[in-house]
Image (cartoon, rainbow, N blue to C red; front, side, top):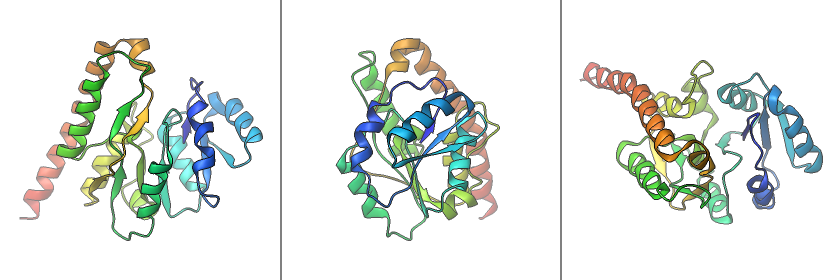
Length: 224
């Protein structure tokens, strides 16, 4: 779970602690700007442990993986609201040997603009039809597939989760969506404006996706 320097909402994390199986390794991936917050959380809740890395969500999550021995990796955002149903669906897959990137359908909490159902619909159609989920959908995958794909980009200024999806697709790791929607905060849309943030996200993911689409086309043509 990456924790950025601007993170203030800990309610979702604290509410979910009792849901996790006792043997799971719960790692908060901190950067210099969030170190003090994560240290306080780990002192107050002994199930949590801190991993410190350079600034940047990609670097934080890669370092957390490097410091964990877990075979399965589940990347969850701090403002994601988990339930027992999510944990159950994850646990059902932990014996699967199949290389897959698992994710959840997306839903937004009621802390954003009234137009958020459109974002929910768009995200879930993109996942179902194009096989391109984003990180707030809770990526679950096996460590060997994560390493083989090249891990999270630490150079990308944004969209490291989106890039990981394409990296996995290029090594033939398919996307599989669970059935229980994962609820995440929509407060950024309220703070920055629905139109501005929605258009920015659409522009960014299309700009990032185009080179990977062309790469996949070349791969397919080369294998014919």
